[in-house]
Length: 172
Image (cartoon, rainbow, N blue to C red):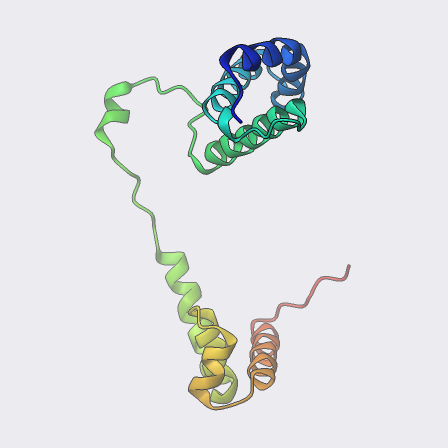
């Protein structure tokens, strides 16, 4: 049985202060808490037919609020934000990107490839396959060796490369 509009409004009025303090604790900002409160009310009203009569309305709306906050947080986290104001809007509108200098990375890759040629192929092949994104099981199937051997060879390849490069693990 769905809540009537009057029942819904009555319950929301009764819990408004409590829900707002919860929103304030989540957002730590007055305006954001108001936005979260409004969005929670909207979602609760929109889905009031899913509320089971006889259950706790406070818990139901609090869960809606928490999930709304989490979803909004995840969206904001995934978006890129520009924190500094752009003085010259024409420059920003031109959409020019800086050109990166790949020389250092190329030199590092050439050095790594020369070091890989110095270690035995039974170690370098699984290491390179793993580096290129293959999973242990795929490497195992391609090279026709057990997964444990694949892991061991990748570990030993790393160890040999570190020794050739001259890096020593830092003591903790």
